[in-house]
Image (cartoon, rainbow, N blue to C red; front, side, top):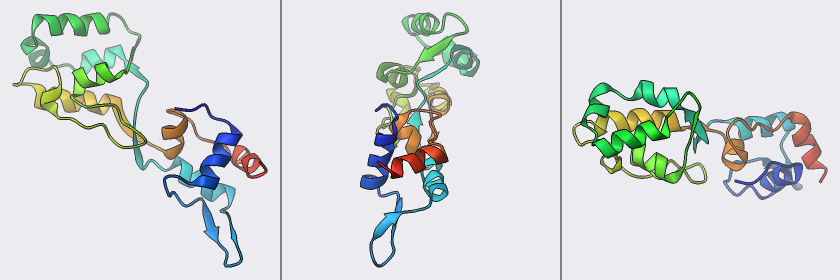
Length: 164
């Protein structure tokens, strides 16, 4: 994921690598759509992203007794070790794989895998993996795919980018 800048925004709009449609053909040339239209396109939640971190208490609250009880002792200890307090659990490829059975989302496409690829016991993986996936992998915008969760270029940033 790249850092946000007006130049990165201009490059996204000019190149339109995902075919979002930031420009229109006027018959006598192609030009950018209005700033508000571009903002709407950039902010539409049409993609999948992984949260960079989730609340440790949410992981604990989502873990059912049966899910925890049927996990092996090493897996129980790992879960305790990864969620020791009320802070944030950083989402890495391994954390997502263990909890959900899925790979990280890439370029707005949901991670691949299956519930039984998670570390949950077979009797509980069909319940626990989707519950954890709902915490980690969420709907996101093109801007969030490019620059991170919560990033939404302002109208003035879009306008400034048109002048680069």
